[in-house]
Length: 432
Image (cartoon, rainbow, N blue to C red; front, side, top):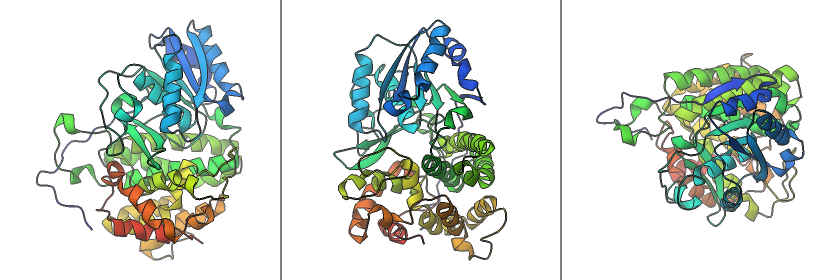
């Protein structure tokens, strides 16, 4: 179903991104960088597993060497929930006051730090700020504490975005808090910090990078929206000339680096870190759509399956679907469904990701899907939702959860119905 034609098309797009410091060894300069913000104290937010590597404490020591008081809290949980974020906020409130927050870790640590930085300066509870209709959709009244993000995984793009993603346990759905005040003021991307990332984590996180780039590239154009007043404008404004540049560069890098990075090649890991940064700068403004909207219920409902699925590279005792894996799980079918909205964009993306033309003989509506399936198989992703534990009985629940993600579905290049989503989920049970 095509998008309605706006009576007065939007003529303005917005773009924003954090300051960026990129390169091997960049994290060693973080004391200088945080002190340059005028901070005198910093809370370092990480997770327990990463804390055991010593990276967060080394960051804290670099801050102390620059004259700052620094304290490490390993309060982030893998795949944060409303409960884990509320606990992290309470722990931070019980410590001495801080005037900056430094996140060290993957998207889970960065998103936890976003919630902490928000609620250390704004009144109310976490759920007040969670996107409607799951939460209250409240906008922050005060600026959050300055947040510096130091990603140690290549994929989430959380260091560039305005979004804090979480599971709302009672609702059995993954959603988020979205506001420009959550965007980090500085991203310090040091590829050396990803050297110990297991292949399974690189594969899953890399699929998140790829879908960030693909979804922002295929997002509805900013000109397809009704004209907005300044106070109505949101960070996700649709595909635009600047986000397109970053999405293209990310995909071209991924085409040459993804498989090598999973295999542990050093140069490929650096290119993946750069691709993650570019993709974050693209989707952090254009937005993402159907694969990410599907990912929230796919990841959020796995706890009820009784599934034996455990992702490679993740030290977990219970069934868990990493975010990037959840996004990728329906991506091939989702892009087949959106193909007719803009065939040329889908074919161009397929050509960038398949420069050797291995899937050039596949019919055009399925070509991008074929490229994605071949890549997913090569890097060890699940063969479909059925391998994770989902079946026909779960289709309606996933569709219902996806329909709650209207903030994301509004960015899709076509109107998406429950029937469309059910078709995508069923087609994603078996990719091969």
